[in-house]
Length: 213
Image (tube, rainbow, N blue to C red):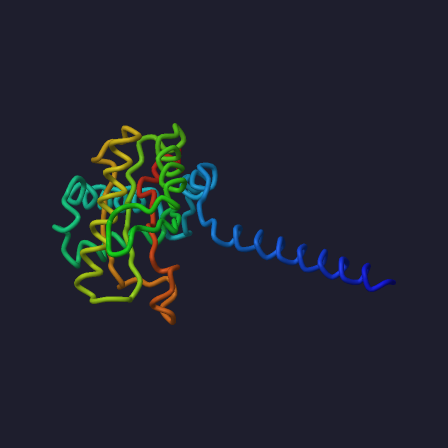
């Protein structure tokens, strides 16, 4: 092999490696999800009952959940007490849900342009007939950077922003969207509080009655 061939062979390898790295970075930086992914995550799962749990127990539990949801429905996010926020989290733990890595402008509740595809996909999913009639919790979460009180308020404002966008742009009923903020209290990666993965919006389908039909 001549020196000329070696030179251009090395150039080709270097160029190919650069292309591969660029493609990897582009893929890693795209955290947006599709409407289909959101629909799959939020569709009610088939109801499962333990041997000691009967229909009457299920009905009673559903009635209690419905009563509680009605007390927080259409409430200002900032008006929720710590106890109410925790009760929402407790109920949401067993419901269909999805974490969306929706980013906002720095120290702001304005949705970042890079995250608009995810917000738009969410609007289309919640407008789909498959999810019609459900009540959804939109929960805002921050990372652990900054003060606890500030982060709590920021998470509430961001949840409200998502609700406002969905109501204005997709005609969703505001009464069907319960917003809540958790600040830095429920980190997805508690060992790395500043990790961007903690900055997210969780959407939960609270109304699973259609699963038992």
